[in-house]
Image 1: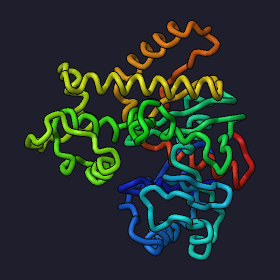
Image 2: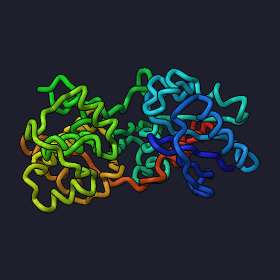
Image 3: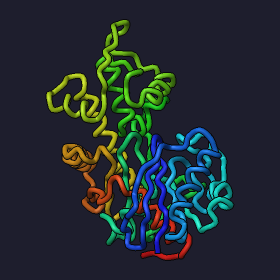
Image 4: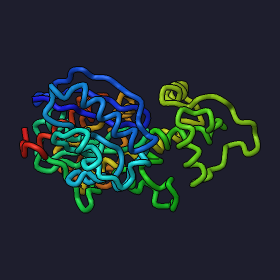
Length: 330
């Protein structure tokens, strides 16, 4: 049994055939169909035509706030044209097979509980550190959805209660977009030349954080993850305090998830998880909090690294398909 698994990202769509043992084949990538509903349906339909003789259904991972039961996108992230759409209804005529859909962060969590670092856990949590911060809460080996499928929206955890702007939330303090934005401001780097220029400029319109040198000429240097950690390794005085704030904020997220849900393990993944020092510094920061609060080890977070990285949403989408279309928890 195989499904066509689709992972819709902000700039591209990954696809693969995935079987019930989480094995991938025929994987590839296409440009994201962001422009219209028709472009979205056409892209999925062409992939369906290519693989329809080999699959029994379609498993979808999407960004945004999603009702996985009904297939509705309440908040469609980068896919503005799909806002409020029922994906199942849009695709049913073009692709007449069973379908299942889930938020991308929750798919990452499902991948880990199915075949990854949480495979032996009944209850767990996954935190995905990428451009934003995402994840999912696992209860009895299934996603804990909560009211309106909004449980596990880690981006909106408050990490700085002194702020009443986007700077207060984990999206800006414990993820790549926020890290990049703060570094650009501290080092007088031009937002318009960054890889995520449109998002950074949108954030700047909301926050309007001043540059370190008001009125000075802006540098055209790019501030991506590789460059930021290079500056850190060189002891850059502008970047170090921003990174320390990032680690403190991430520790707050991890601790609050642990206290609220008491997962057996918290698995951390995403592109930023490839930086070894993040795990080391996060562990030290948490220990400082534990000592300061004088709390017992039963309340300490057990942090592990996610097994899956680039393929996590495809594998998680397949497990979600099994749960919804086969009522099967493997």
